[in-house]
Image (cartoon, rainbow, N blue to C red; front, side):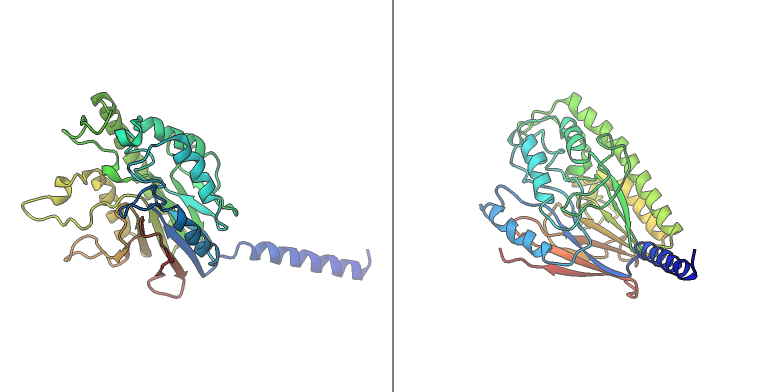
Length: 342
């Protein structure tokens, strides 16, 4: 082999290595989109959301987003939980986005389906349907796919729980829905608005306990991995508003009184992990449809400085939130509400 050929081969090899290594360089700055609780067939102002969705999707598609995350409730709480409503239409919606899109379950897709106005389904049957049809591989939705790590085997239990890494940030999405995390308190089972039986409520409570343990285990494992990689931050996405705006007092536990006790064990684990983490922790949720950015943990005398909560918009306000990650920003995350003409 001539010297020229050897030289050319060496250059090609070095360029190949450079391209290979460059493909794994983690970006120091990127943006992602947050949205949820939409579209509703009928919202609080009596109108439908369908006409607004195209403008919202166009807004996100025209932005340079690494990915988007939908934090639950693909339909309203007064429409039926049919296969089409919680399955086929959802896939079509998410796959219309250019960027990879990660779906975190809400309560209107399964927890509340026992209600008569939701079709009187069995909650756990609907959850199993979602796992079978919407979490069938290790990739996101969207025209561009992103690989995800699932807690459970695809189509099986806990396959909806996901983790991924982008840049120097770890992300984790967990099935923690509204309606008290599918925990049914005494006296709240049998009522005229539901077809649920006591046997089904007992099954729901068993499901809640097991999933709560699995959620905590997956959260702890994600924090551990983030610490091992010296991550700058961790983003946790759930659906439920766990009731941060219900402060506990010495004589009354408002959160328990308001049936928010289904989140207690998980929040305790989140506080412990956040305290032991040097980076920034961002909790994303939907559920109550009010855009908020605050630091609600733990209380006024024990502020977790590295913890921030962001609640996304929801129907009838079809807007989204752009989050930008910057490694040179001490707070890591900045937030921009993206108001779409509705």
